[in-house]
Image (cartoon, rainbow, N blue to C red):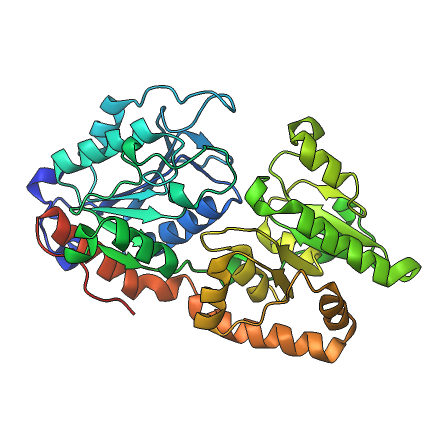
Length: 408
């Protein structure tokens, strides 16, 4: 592998088609943790797919893997060994060795979420010194964290990363505007842009409904309400449980409602006490995840996402691809996405409307068909032309030139 300093400014076309040393260009996809069903892990896998499609040898780098795969690199310092404990020191020597072999680095929320600031700034320092083209994808800047998990946003930490020699990609226009207001040098250098998340139809259809429901001990006639989240205050679990309870009251004895939350750990003791109290009132509680998202959506009859804040809300378009009705909100980005894509989303605070749609087969089919047609434009492989523009822009910025001007 040729050291990056010898080819950092090669044009993208040459970089992808001819490295000069006979090898594929290498991209590092870096986050705190990967391989799970959380929004960052799911979105990161889509970028992995597209970068691979463009000819990159993509290497996942994290400090924790929910599911680890061959070729994954484990670097300490980006994830706490125990919940509530500080992260160990970043292994900067290992990071430097990786970066010197890389043609592109994507920091996926690592430079944004304030859970490992020293590690994020360590990566930034090494990347700038080595002049490697870098994309920093921002899902959750600290000022948007309303759960209280990290406390008030502290800009003195240096996060989110906002250096103008890196391309900064937000996943919604609300966040892009907030970055532009706080860091005007980014739009001045064309180093800031929004690129919406994508969905991969191949991962979401053809799931095993009967087998999954049997494994969950959910009867064929039950109404299974899926809430695909990791627990947190901004996920607004009480609202999802109340919607399920409201639906159960309307069905009465005619149909059993089951509330399914896909919290990563199915251990009751891992659930915060205040959420345990809410779960105690949930109708037919089902807790835990399944290996395949296609099976998860196939088993469900209704998907809910009642969060007060989401950077994107990946389950919403995923459920639409899988042909499921969605009750979501009130997180502000949903309005932006619904208007941009033309989605029709049910309001979880209007349980009577949700009930009527579920009980009217014609209306339900029209809703599902409408959304499925409009979510098709978010196909992952269709993102390849945009990804090319993002990589070119990152390359220009690393060389000290202006970055991206527009993307589709």
